[in-house]
Image 1: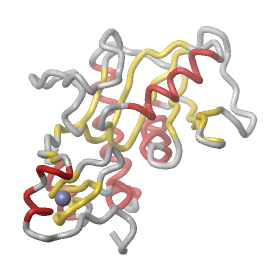
Image 2: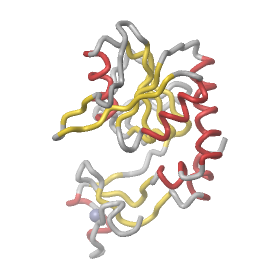
Image 3: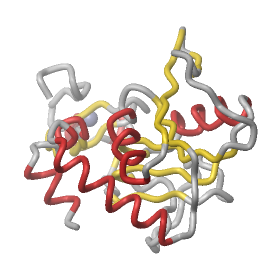
Amino acid sequence: MDIEKIYKDAGAYLEGHFLLSSGNHSRYYLQSAKVLENPRIAGELAVELAKQIKLAGIKADCVCAPALGGILAGYELARALNIRSVFTERVDGKMTLRRGFEVKKGEKFIICEDIITTGGSALESARVIFEAGGQIVAFAALANRGFCARVNSAKSAKATCKLPCDIPFFALADFDFEIFSPDECPMCKMGSVAIKPGSRGN
Ligand code: ZN
């Protein structure tokens, strides 16, 4: 599956000058919501991701996604694996499990995101599930931004990856875009101003 082509065809592979949530700048940005707005494509991506997880012999009872970004990917992955799907959400900045979602003691969870950058939100979700008595058997994402090491890729994790190294991480592709600190950003040096993705119709 050519994930880069799927993102490009969906208009989800943006080129410009972007301010990332880390404060750094990038020439590219992946807007997974644009890929996931097509349920057929979302389903096909999830089936591919599920295939990798099954091939690795991993069995889970439930998928948990950090809201909002992870919900659609997590839901489709759960459909492909024929298991439950829940999500965690932030309340006053703190990740929580609400809406009557339950975790049974020892239940096995896959934490799923649309994109894993350093894995911060995924890790917060994992902590919530763990503290509720669940067990984390894998992390999953449609796209890996190249900070964390995924199964089936030779790329190694960077120091900023927050995912635990003893739990496998599955993703469909690596998108290792160059990022710049604002001081060293070549686009800023050209006089351009970085925009926050989502703020101007992207
Ligand atoms: Zn810049």
